[in-house]
Amino acid sequence: MDAMADDWDQGGVVRLICAGWEDAPAGDFVQLRLLAGLHRLVLTGQEPSLARFYPNLGGTADPAGAWPPVREAMKRHVAELADDLRIAPQTNEPGRAVALLVGLFHSVRQSGLAKIRLLEPGASAGLNLLLDHYRISGRQPQPWWYGPAESPVVLSDAVLGAVTTAPFTIVERRGCDLAPIDATTAEGRLRLISFVWPFHVERHLRLAAALQVAAEHPVSIDEAGASGWLAAQLSVAPEPDVLTVVWHSVTRVYWTAEERTKVAGLLAAAGRRMPLAYITMEQNASTYSGNPELDVTLRQPGAPAGATILASAAGHGATVRLATVPDHGVPVRIIEP
Image (cartoon, rainbow, N blue to C red; front, side):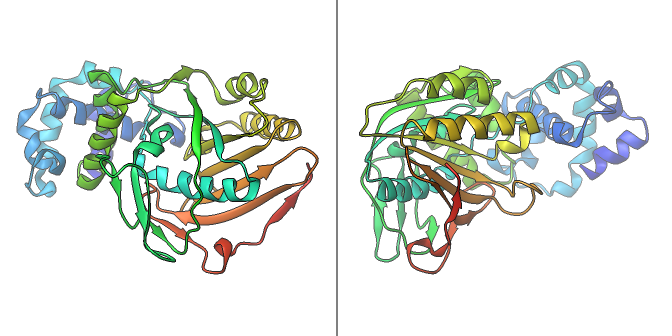
């Protein structure tokens, strides 16, 4: 990216590809869109000479020498890479299922409800909706595990801190996204893989395993924005013994202030009519900086909502660090129902 920035300043191929994006806001992440487009050229074999710089493809070449051949590859694919800039970054990281699992354990214990209706706005390909098909384990207070032993997705020792498990069953799962990805198609898989950094080999292995699970257990992802979709989903209450869980991770940063306000209002209103848990793995709501926090807000009709910050998580979610005092050790904030 340093070399890309220099090339931009010099009016090179990067400036040519990015024509029309000069005033794009930082949140559009134009540089990531361009690198993902380049990654797709390598993944599809259109630029095989670059594979030596991509560890996820077995490459071991020094990345310090990557820019000259990358620049030449960009020159050969100006129109294609310019077109790829329309594709917004989507990293459907299955490691974030660890945070969701911890939040579900907490919500089931606090609500006493073990049947889950799981709803995820900003779900991308819906890989985290499949957490009950993943094998997740920890060591505190004693060794514990969740999920089928034969799962190809294995997230071992993924939680730092004492976990109190709670059995639950997902009776319904659904998600939405402005640009949903079908993980059962070659195009969908290519797009997801292209947005994972090439040097994060472990994440590529984890994603490949999650895509295998998704092929066997496809989920329904609607093309819709968060607030409109949630309004429709929450308009119908499930059976009284079902806990509705709305979950999202590293998604709120892409919402407008108006969208965030609408979602908050919908959840507050729904929580007056049905048991509802709101589980998020997001950066600080004011600064959008630092590691994401795992936050759970539990609402039940006739009671004030209790909001608890349970943990912090790595950006890609595979390690969740709990607080160190009993029951996750975080004081509960009381919110008016």
